[in-house]
Image (cartoon, rainbow, N blue to C red):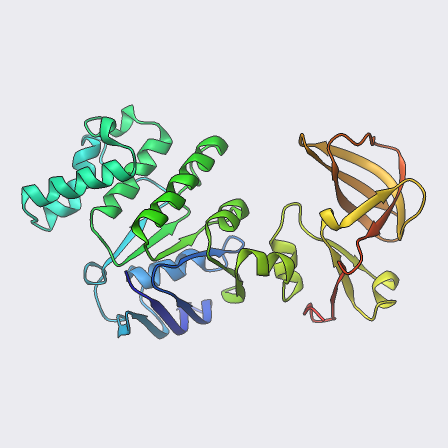
Length: 332
């Protein structure tokens, strides 16, 4: 596998700047996840690295070698897309082997690579089936197998689980995590799903409007967001934000506090309000409280605590858990 370095990467299309001065280093064998809202440039960045789009400015290096001018086939990269893009008339085995046959590898080598990928992805019993006879999760594993057999230096995943239902997403996410451990592969992975990002990534890159807002481990981003955008984007439910006089008393434009750091009391607290809704999730509940002058705040509570819509409650942040942001949105 290889390390990847992006230096001042930009992409313009017509009068629009899709990516702006992206600089990023991905270590050998590292699993890096790109997250951000739709249209922020995540998939475009993958396509530039893969060579499917041309760079407007900046450089891409793999293992210290500049690859801007290399055609996609020469970059040693395998890409897995949101759509499985399998040939419907071919078996899973032939789909996985297709690129190797096109590259004119000998039959024994092709069979060895396909059988090994099938073993890793637990597809041995499905190799002779066509895509129509496979579940969505099985088709995605075949698509991943097609990438593995190429023995690439770098794997690029572009929203690979978006077409799967919730249960299959969890199962396939575990498969991808296991694959990374087995292959010790360098992976750059795009998703809009925070659960995928937080559970898969060694590091997360948060993007917005064509720029990198912050890079860090899942824990670093969750506990120490550098600005309001990252604070609001990472975490579900998202961070509570409080502006106005409440924030001004602490020399901030905005205060932020996570739902799990808000405590509900029936007697006293920093804010008072009325329960609007209780989301029961089993061991936990999310309690939505409308506080006059402050707005809607969400607190995380034990699932067995009895709270109901219309009830009057008080909220207080845990000591040291309030984050402060200035007028520009930067954390103080």
